[in-house]
Amino acid sequence: MNESRAILETPVERTEGRLYTYDELVAELPETNRPCELWDGKLIMSPAPSFFHQEIALRFYRQLYAWVSERALGKVIASPIDMVLSPHRVTQPDVAFIARDRLGIIGRVINGPVDLAAEVISLGNRNRDRIEKRDLYEQYGVKEYWIIDPEAQTVEVLFSENGRYRLLMRCTPGQTAASHLLAGFEVVVTALFHDE
Image (cartoon, rainbow, N blue to C red; front, side):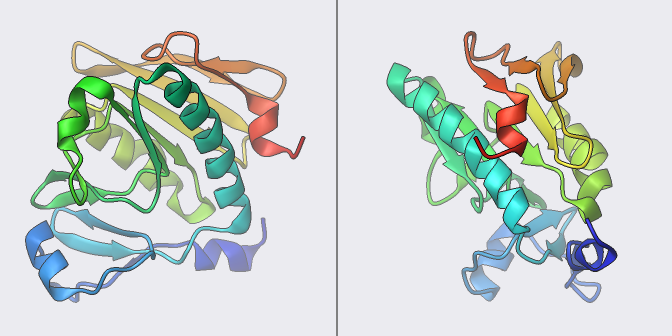
């Protein structure tokens, strides 16, 4: 990854000191496919993800979607989709799963925490995905969080027990990452990072 890509992937705060609620944001800004999140009322807009980022996210999405659909376990969606955790906290997970018994949280957006969220780390967003989103998802009750890191070529699976995340596994190419929440769902790590 080159330096110019790192600069392009750095999030930009576009609020000029203004704090928004999600309802105000929806009322004032046009709908967009550009990544846009709300952190404590601050609007964070990022450039579109890189091609490689999207390839990885969509490889994971296709595998999860096929597995969940075949078993009629719920719904799987890929970003951009708003997950509204509170009036001042909104994220857009790269991939999200909502269990069948919780489909009521789906409206125009996802109103509440999903059951499983996956984030592909962008070079300029390492801290946000690894620390800030991890803490936020833990706090709001996302049961399982997959952190897919293209630079390190790792997949980490965290599962919530008693409201705290526990690292279930950290897998590298040649290994298989497995879900605790969706028993039997597995992803070959090498297949996420390389064309078959």
